Amino acid sequence: MIDKLKPGARFDLHLHTTRSDGAFPLDEVLERCVAARLDAVAITDHDLVGDLDTEMRRIDGKELMLIAGAEVTGQHEGQEFHLLVYFPGPVQQGFRDFCTSQIKGRAARYETALSNLGMVGEGPDDAAWRGERAVTRFHLAQALVRDGRADNIGDAFSRYLRAEHGKVPQLDLPFVDAIRIARGFGGVTSWAHPPLDAFTRYIETFAAAGLQGVEALRPGLNRTARRTYKKACQRLGLFATGGSDWHGWARPQDLGLHSVRKHELKDFLEALAAA
Ligand SMILES: [Zn+2]
Ligand SMILES: [Zn+2]
Image (cartoon, protein in one colour):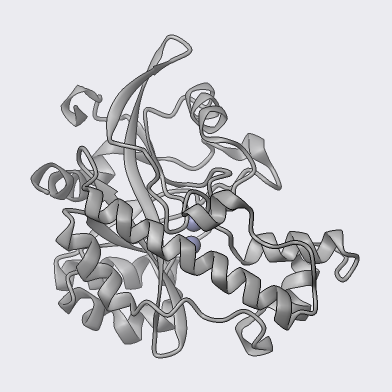
């Protein structure tokens, strides 16, 4: 399927929908991807692969390659990190079940956070409890704004939702377990938006656990970050992935401004084909 894409094909391997904390439903995100002239995209909602499989879709008369994915949250030494997982074809039921249990854990965490924040009447909906929609800190921030407890999303985070406030329990899956579980179900893994200091400290540990890639092709990275990622990737045999982490809230029209060309993803695409 990937062979059908031309060498200059434009990829975005990190996108969100209303299945987690994105602003637009899946179908609309895919229509926007086509309108933005992307050729291949991965939907990577938080802890959720949903019913997606990797396939070619025909949308508005154009072909779009859809890569099934998820962005799994884990923690390591008290810090939260995100793992991008991609699948070359049909997603194994075991990985879907794993996601469902993570999302149910998110619903429980959300309810605990509401009570810690002294909020009532805004609990997770049925879809969240069923494991079909991932509730996140962002949804808590929206609830705080609706309640008049914060002026905007940023204000809600800085006043209530950061780790140091202790209101939102950490999702307790060890990051190295997330890597092993994803690999065990045939997923291809990449560390999403790694903070530079944590990257330097932990990349060897994560690579030893089976991490295959680093999300090194992102908008707004400075030269130091690019060089650090590149050196580590060469040394440890990791590939680079790239995406915009577009959620669609602030500037939805920015979808497609950041894309990664097929030739930049050569090693990732080889790993995907071999998975
Ligand atoms: Zn993330
Ligand atoms: Zn993301």
